[in-house]
Image (cartoon, rainbow, N blue to C red; front, top):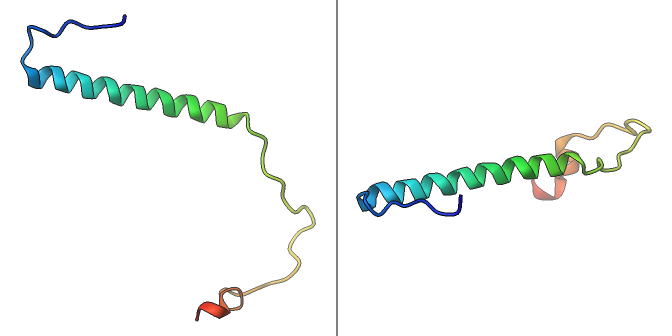
Length: 64
């Protein structure tokens, strides 16, 4: 379906239908993006464990 005839509806109803259709398009786009992202390989990570313990203060000592 390419178009819907709303000529006999009040403008406020036609605008609401337009907003609803836009909302549905956004939901479908999010679902498609989520499925596409599922195929993306995970980022590399460090497999050798933790090398030491740092406190928040040590990490951000220049910002205190």
